[in-house]
Structure formats: C-alpha cells, structure tokens
Amino acid sequence: MDTEAARLLVVDDDPEIRELIQAYLTKQGFTVHCVGSGEEMFEHLRTHDADLIVLDLMLPGEHGLSLAGRLKSERDVPIVIISAQGDDVDRIVGLEVGADDYLAKPFNPRELLARVRAVLRRTGLHDSRSEAEATNVVRFGPYTLDQAAHRLARNGEDVPLTSGEFDLLCVFAAQPNKVLDRDRILDLLTGAERLPFDRSIDVRVTRLRGKIERDPGQPRYIRTIWGKGYMFCPDGE
Image (tube, rainbow, N blue to C red):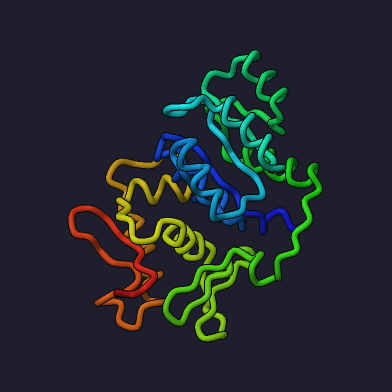
C-alpha cells in the first residue's frame, strides 16, 4: 500500500507531544488520530480501523507494555512503542510482546516518520480501500484539501498556494475547532527555535485568508480569537 495513505493512531498522555506528532505526520500525508490513554485507544478501535499504532509506555492506568500485549492478542496491527525511559529491558519486552519497533524519547519527528514508514513497508500491509478513502482529504465549504497530493481545490478548481501557505492550512486542518496561539502554530509548523514575540504567523494567516476566504476581513474558516490566537472552523459557522 501507499504508506502515506495509512491511518495512524497515536496514544500518548502528553497533549503537546500528541499535537506535534499529529501535525508532522499529517503533513506527510497520513491520516492521524490521537488519544490519551489505553482506555481511549480501545474505545477508538471499536469504531475505527488503524494501520499502525504509535504507543507510549508511560500512560495513566494500564502500562503500555500490557496494552501492547492485549492489542496483539486481539488484532494484527503494527505497533511502534515510544518511551521516555529508553530502558533496554522495556525495549526487549516490548519487542517480545509483539511491538514492531521501539523509539526512545526525546526523538526527532523525522526519525519517527522513518520508523513508521519502515514498519508499514516491512509488514506488507495491503489496502483494499478506494483511492478516495485512502487519500488524506479534508473538506470544508467548497474546498477539498488533499494533503497526500499537496493540492487545494475549490469546486474542483485548483487554488494556488505557496508551500508555506499549504503547510499552515494543514496545521489548521489537523486541529479543527481548537484555539491555537502563535507559538503553538509555529511549533507545529517547524518545531524550531524562534525569536521572542515572533509575529510572522499573523502575516502568513493574512495571506492564507486572502486565498480561501470570501471576505478576508470577516473570515469564516480561520478565525481570530482575540487575546488567544486562531481557530480553524471547517463548517464555516
């Protein structure tokens, strides 16, 4: 299968890590869902499929190693374990209970991406979903955002975006109906150090609004939440 079309489930109790992983892997074309505990993971899997699970070991309640063992006993799904401990015993036990790879925190998101791709290739997953279902697509108003194809269309017509504008829209699309301050947006875009009081995100938002809003002065999709940041509203309400 096209690994970038895969559906990933990230299980980590740290919301910042979840957001960072979700934003980065979504930009690579994956469909990414996140939960904060083992209980939420099994609840999600009752109604959704996952092609690979990124599982933190240190979770509230049941330990990640136990969760990995239960997962493997119930379904054949690849697991990449992530852990701040980096303990050889945990690494060995994790692989023994059926995990497909193990990555110690802190890690570079690019390394996680490489591990995820390698596991998907190694497990030889075959996807019977239609091309439309397999593509990571977000729809809002008259727009279709196809992240795998790096394309935004309005009623079927391409909307030209710069790489920076496209990446910013993908960050918003990964966090619908959620207020993001400027620092968080910049973190999700780059994960890099920046100057204090960096207001460049305001310029980027203004340019993106000019491409997708009917009236940029009264935006429907990318709204300003005064004193807090911005919020992407896919329903335009």
